[in-house]
Length: 512
Ligand code: NAD
Image (cartoon, rainbow, N blue to C red):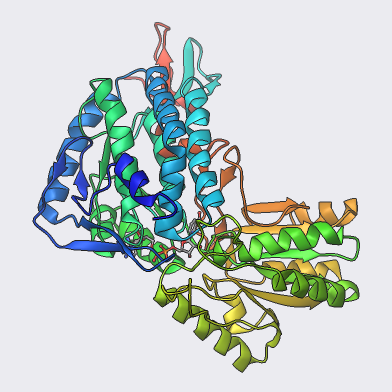
């Protein structure tokens, strides 16, 4: 145990076997099967977690409903104080939790720490927000009347999260939802359930310390069937789901069928346009981290480079040279640049994507392959690869969650923007240029159609201060900063008559 994993697990309250259904400090034995969490880093079993059944789920939802009655009446700035303490508790466990995230999910330790930092940042954001849940006032058209709007807590927020950000995505939702007065029921990814258990322990202690009821933060564990309990449940007014487009369509339909609200954060197919006026050093660095960081398993990973024909050969050569220096190995070893993909299914999808790309005519620039031998025993390590391809290839149109980068040539900026937008997804996009006209055209209404559009920054690595999310098949939801909090509240318009008359709006006469 050269990375001190066992000691970190112990400090985080993770055992060999763990219950998975919780209303806070209370853990419910559902008498169900356990799912096993294996590390993609070394293939070893980290721990087991019991799944949630209907009975445990019912208990959790009932308790969440009770908790909401109390929590919604706690003044928002006081709710913010509790979220502040959660942020502070996360500061204390940053190294341990970052290590667990890295070990369970396979991202580098630095990125694991970054993910916990993101949780801390969103808690700080939410503390400020707790005093800024502003509504507008309007001028009434009727004399002696006043109009305003206020934002009220919504109720139970269901959170379904993906494996690749096993803890940060939850915090983007919960930190805001809590200061808004909502209670949360979280179903973490079945591929990273222990990270969920660790978070639940951390927050439960803080709520308990403040004598808050059980049920403000609940956890349910399992696969899609447990996710479906949330999406089909009319007692859950908002379901925030992060994951594949396939999942988002199912969750969106289930929630829509009962006219609930869904907030969907789905797949991306993100491109960087590299123009002849780009700072190429910067472009190469941005593309490299975007494409190989987190082994290509970020929703914002760079999947396509749209490169002007005049600089195509140079970019391609320099990227190939950078790729040759990548060190692939255990994510906890800080000298490695690229860790494993999540599991062997992901390896299979990577291999299939390469085959499809080649069959469609893609030309190899940096070859891929699955690594084996010492250090690669888990079978989850793959070589980041680069292909020259065309945008219309079916495989290029598709998000493969692995480090495969497609290079595409263009002649005019208009063509580049059309290519960038010419995929079903609309999450993140970027242009590398020092030319103001090119940059502004890319950001204009006729430019990128994505939820995120950057200039001289790659596609991945968003800050919490902005609203995060994307268009088209990415699902349209927005989380995190700016006014994303409004999704977690219900808006109420109030008209107050302080006159002694009762005039109707629009001047309508109705006298008896
Ligand atoms: P996934 O869709 O397989 O699973 C995501 C979650 O949805 C899991 O918790 C899973 O159990 C649950 N789920 C699956 N089917 C469901 C159903 N029918 N009903 C209810 N719940 C269901 O995704 P994954 O492999 O864990 O994550 C990778 C995907 O997530 C990629 O497509 C990536 O782009 C996307 N992602 C998007 C964002 C974003 O903010 N846009 C962030 C992270 C990941």
